[in-house]
Length: 441
Ligand code: UGA
Image (tube, rainbow, N blue to C red; front, side, top):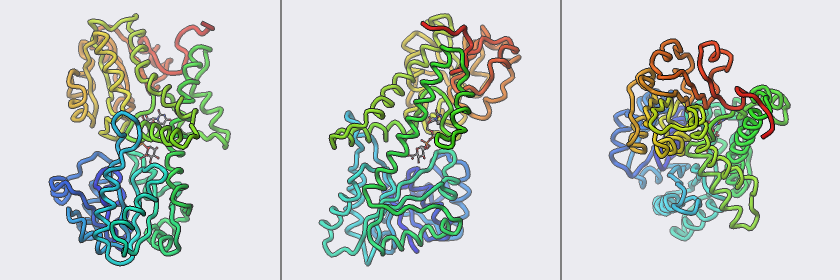
């Protein structure tokens, strides 16, 4: 089986590499020559644990290659995956499908013999049907089927998510297309991964429904966390108490500064737009989007409150800038809204992130970037943990006390406990674990 993977962004590169690890021949195609040249040299442009090694071994085995030549990659392929970007269209939140449609047209010109065209990018309901129409119109003689096969990879654990997924969803409508897809995922059949065959539209909607459900789950626990602070409850015990109910489940109930990343914010907005367009609004997700947006800036208010009401003229030390650990991705990270609000309020910001600083420097040029954790705190008035990187989990608080002008820690990821920090002599502010006297407003 041969695969052409169009697009060497996050999804394309991880999926293409993992398919080659399954034993298939994969050509990853991108029109960016510089990117392809660097990939050929084994240079991985994204930070994803384990990916560089997997690329290296599969490229050495000859199963994985990189090319700018879409035509010959598609010509020889049994399946062509479209894994190009679908950014939010400026201004209105709809997904911008121009890259997907342009790829479909190019693929149509190159198809030779029966080929399955698979949309792997997250695309709104109806996109697969439109890809089908474009290919048919461009090449009326083409012998093909369009399939939807959404990815459920998390940044930072994408390889494991691909190799050992909870399920694979395949929107395929002919036996021939289903058979090709079965063969591509043969390795997962062997380990009895549930594989769900659906229509094109159903598969496309499953992806959005999954992401927005998770976004809603996080938003729910974030609001419960705020209530916990008011009533004197502990959000972690609440999460455990509800999560042990098998119908609710334990995962994605960790409170924080609001969800970020390249997926949840964009997908929630896109689903809201699709639902409105079809006259069937998803009011619950509209509310989730609104709450999450406001939450990110509300985190800056918490930091100001921890500093006695104002950060004007003060220095805030921030640990962690990426939207979560184990990624260099800064897209829609809560840190962006927090830093911007603090700068507006007159603060000086010093920050450190293990992987995200190159990107952060481009997005937030007014921040002072430090070379390590402790340099960030030197002379600062408050310490804030925004992203829960492992290296921030065992800080030396005696040392920190000597660096900060006052021992104040705002822990937006709850990686420490109020008891431990009280013992260390810190004024500790976390999420959803009452550190002040509860009571009604
Ligand atoms: C998400 C989904 O989890 C993947 O299944 C999906 O394939 C991917 O989007 C996508 O559509 O491509 P990802 O954005 O990499 O993956 O990150 P998550 O681990 O889901 O985290 C998203 C955000 O939620 C982060 O900001 C994280 O800090 C936050 N989060 C997550 C919480 O605040 N609390 C939690 O309990 C879990």
